[in-house]
Image (tube, rainbow, N blue to C red; front, side, top):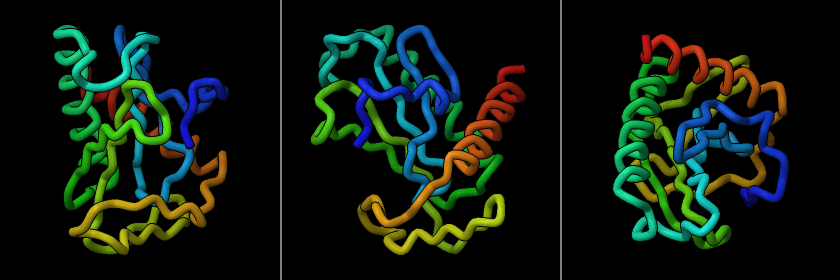
Length: 145
């Protein structure tokens, strides 16, 4: 479960005015990220201000372009559920019709074409998360130039 009471500073991809983007600690979906609203009292999408919505759309477009460049997903899912963590945040989930290999690790999206489900048995090392994070940082930097 993703809670901001934990220290996720090492997973930070990019800090925006209203949002933070972190690489998700479980990479069973290669390139999965969490987009976290920085305002403490934001609970769900209807709480977001116009400015937060506009920046969120910009962030999702940037993440989409970066993920397509880096991992070549076949589809993208965006999930703003709030079931486990009651705070405005979303999951950015690249989806894959075929297996992918990144940094020597094989990823298989066994539910492609269906609703995603986190594979809690998939162990994501700190080193792997950092490699994915660095790839995103570099891609987002190139795309902003």
